[in-house]
Length: 389
Image 1 (cartoon, one colour):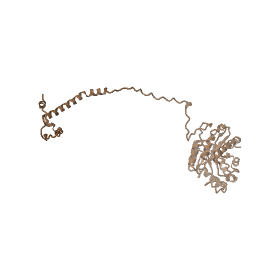
Image 2 (tube, one colour):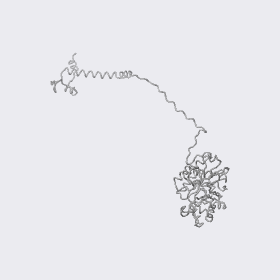
Image 3 (cartoon, rainbow, N blue to C red):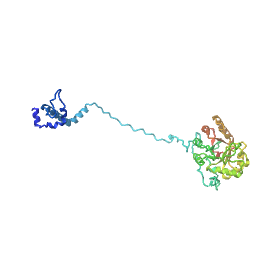
Image 4 (cartoon, rainbow, N blue to C red):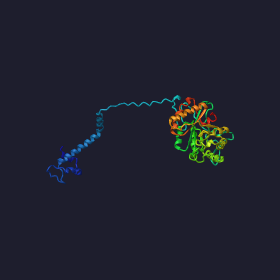
């Protein structure tokens, strides 16, 4: 059957194609201007367009019926391989730590590790203030002897075994509290067996004393007293002075004592003139006895009478033997520490005074690492009272 007849049977409406066949209107052969707008297309051209439409419809139908199979055949023609992946093995279980494999605790500010050769047991001080050992005053809380006879110097002392018969060395780190950085460094780096003496001028002295005692340090007050070159060398306000009467000096002493609680007694590194005066020292000795406190005579003056007067009055006393860091060279400090050991072996005990210099703290820590191996015990100052010859 010819194409024109087929188109006639299908009643193909050529006019319906006009909007979509605008491109045919623009199609002309070279130099052909016969096709003008509005003139019907020739029958052969219409037949060709119809064949193209029928062929496109057939292709779409075939793809709809066979597209899936064609895609599968195309995928099958691509080479591929399947690899089995085994699951990763579970991580090995850590063996449970035994008692012998437990690592040592990390040192903390509240519980420092013991030094080599030192007892491992932690020492806890009695929290201050203890009821019955404090009386209120206009100068603050003052120490007192309890009605049952307990004395502050004994209750607030750092415990030390009385059965330890080794020679004892006490180190007093003096004049703490004025510099927060220096005092904090001393608290962080010094072992708790070292006694700390705080100045009453320190801001928030009660907080410093509490921190020191929480770490296990025995605490004293470093009371300002008159030096030989006063007033050129002024120890500060409320210092004890030889020119003042006994009542005035006792009042100034109580001003210092009322700044904190929990200390065992007093010392002074400035009183080279005051401690050499029996008339000036005797009222102070009497006040310490009445309040149950001990005295450490730093012997800032070789002619000091503080120790002998305390001994006569029955006040617990200790005597300073060396200032270990007058010379801040490492060798000089090491020499002073060795001399303290020899004095302790001879007299049963020795007391060294020090300042919180970084070099001093460094040499002290190094010295203490093998002190017990040399047969010497580091003791709080309360453990050496009245045993020095």
